[in-house]
Length: 160
Image 1 (cartoon, one colour):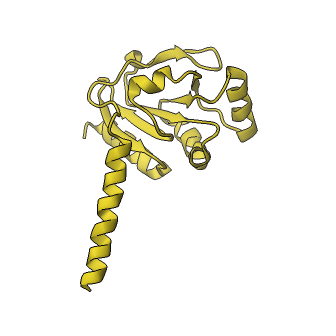
Image 2 (tube, one colour; image 1 turned 30 degrees about the vertical axis):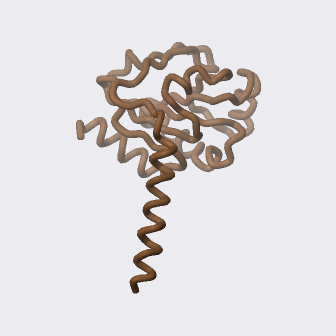
């Protein structure tokens, strides 16, 4: 019994230690302004959002990101979503990836990592929920379920 408890405690220490390490440089509080032109030519600015927005950093070369992409695409049909393709190549390469995967969410290409640095993102996938006042409400580094992201968006919209 004591041995099992020691293993559980050791696992939790390692798990939360890794999470803290991954999030050490992540932006918090007031979100950096995210603005740019999406791959489809639309201008986006987080300053004009009047409701919570999901900001999702991903990369075409990231295997875990591929597991999440369909969930992000589904959420984008119901909530404001902007995604940032982190160091995934040219606009044409990112657009080809979206076509091949059958994805329709809005993307700003961060070819050189400038936006990622502003947000402190070093690991993908990383997802932010930013409320209507521009405050970062939730950050998730690593895989997130669709239900978890929808719940966080609902909480941000409800003011929790």
